[in-house]
Amino acid sequence: MEPPTDEVVTFTAMQDGTAEDYRLLDRIDAEQLQSFPDRVLGWLLTMEDSAGYQVTRLEHSLQAATRAHRAGEDEETVVCALLHDIGDHLAPANHSEVAAAVLRPYVSEKNYWMVKHHGVFQGYYYFHHVGLDRNARDRWRDHPYYQATVDFCADYDQCSFDPAYDSELLSFFEPMVRRVLDERRRGSWA
Image 1 (cartoon, rainbow, N blue to C red):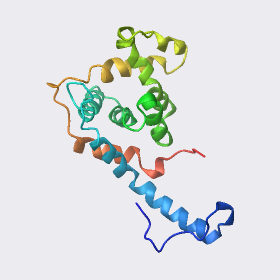
Image 2 (image 1 turned 180 degrees about the vertical axis):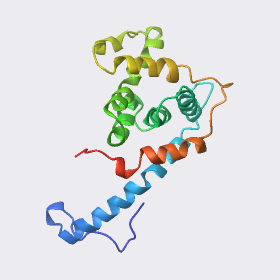
Image 3 (image 1 turned 180 degrees about the horizontal axis):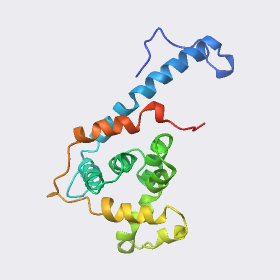
Image 4 (image 1 turned 90 degrees about the vertical axis):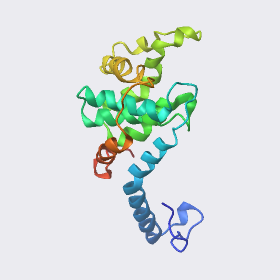
């Protein structure tokens, strides 16, 4: 949300800001946080391209979330399944880390770690076809969230490229996204 043109700070360097300037910025930041779920849902809608798969990236995300929901995962994990690839357009070389950074203030350490590392863990299914080590994930074999990430990729990510799969619509997940990304859930990220 852009602030109205008459609502701008007086400074051109942060060191010159006043308490009034920073109250204005705090208010605008609060408005931005309230509209954050809308922006994230909008990002999902930009994922209508197939990028060479049989389904769009959006459909892949919907399938992953639907599978997680139908398997009885908690709401936070379902939302992570829906949003695990939202970094694709912005940062294709490290999409997992970008998605995890977006989610970090709102999700558990386990789900943050899982989203952050799913790209390498997903490589188990194809790295060997492109000259990479399919077992690259094993460097984290002793990590407490290793198996959860293996399971996430096996059960929800690698199998969600099926044009015949009957996934839920984005509208089904929207209330979940709003609850998980609620500004009141935000952890300490400073």
